[in-house]
Amino acid sequence: MATRILVTGGAGFLGSHLCESLLADGNEVICLDDFSTGSPANLEPLLENRRFTFLRHDVASPFHAQVDEIYNLACPASPIHYQMDALRTVRTSVLGAFNMADLAKAANARLLQASTSEVYGDPEVHPQPEEYWGRVNPIGVRACYDEGKRCAETILFDYRRQHNLNMAVARIFNTYGPRMHPNDGRVVSNFIVQALQGKPITIYGNGQQTRSFCYVADLVAGLRRLMASRHVSGPINLGNPGECTVLELARMVIEMTGSRSKLVHRKLPADDPRQRRPAIEKAHRILKWQPSVPLAEGLGYTIAYFERRLAGRRPAVREATAKHADGHAVITA
Ligand code: NAD
Ligand code: UDP
Picture 1 (tube, helix red, strand yellow):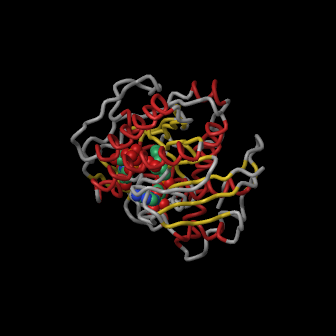
Picture 2 (cartoon, protein in one colour):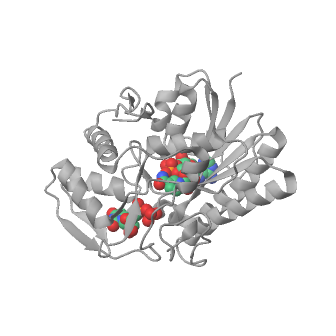
């Protein structure tokens, strides 16, 4: 029997790829989104599918449906977006977690919460294992997101303790790929768009801060593995442990695009974490999951996507879905 799956935030970058992957396996998908940072264009390839339903709804309000699984992804993810209306971000995370947990409880569904590496804050432990409690500034400009996500984790684990909720928490590390919003301010999309347009590449601070970038197809596969592991609650880190500095990323993008853009330095945003790399031994051991798309390969797909998009051509994300060497689907432009 086909599974009926609710994806909140399904019109966003990760959510739209997740919906596509779930539909491709014959599931029925209900996508719930308020289009605050997501876009109808992301759903275009899905709308013709009869097993796909879209509902415009804010997760901060209760929602009722009979579903088997819930992926709760609704939340702005880029720092400029989540800081634009910080109180709304907190509401989305906290009330969204309550509402989805209530729905999962009523429907007897399994709930997967999209958490984040931001729960580790500016970490003193490196790489970050799930056991690390983190170092978050609770009153800083990133707190609306970091503490909102931390509280969402608390809510889910308390629902499990008090109501025996079947739940899981995925701590997602920086993920990139086609369908990122060109103006959402995240580093990979910023650098690619700047390079393609021949504009200066904006390095915040000295560029020595590190991140570890995971390609979207790998991440979606990890989320699905976790959902399918019905007795696993986590939290489980999902990300690519290949770590690089922001400066190294900029140089890679310039080289791959053949751009003549110059580097310019801008002020480092407050509380910007200095280092980040996931420890993924737990995901490997429990989910048998690990990422397989190297940064250069994933950047190639992402650059091709933005080239088409900036040229005003419809990015052909779906048509060009290819098979990676190990057999899993890779989303290319
Ligand atoms: P995104 O901004 O592209 O997608 C978020 C989606 O949620 C958008 O479609 C937006 O319209 C929707 N949304 C926001 N508030 C809502 C609300 N109140 N009600 C209904 N819909 C709402 O971001 P993304 O990168 O796709 O991130 C998806 C999820 O994954 C988020 O929860 C984010 O915190 C988490 N995450 C992403 C990353 C990453 O690198 N992409 C890293 C860590 C965690
Ligand atoms: N960053 C940068 N230039 C940009 C955008 C981001 O140097 O144009 C830096 C940012 O300061 C951070 C890293 O890149 O150190 C990742 O930023 P992003 O907003 O993508 O994600 P997050 O900080 O949430 O990991």
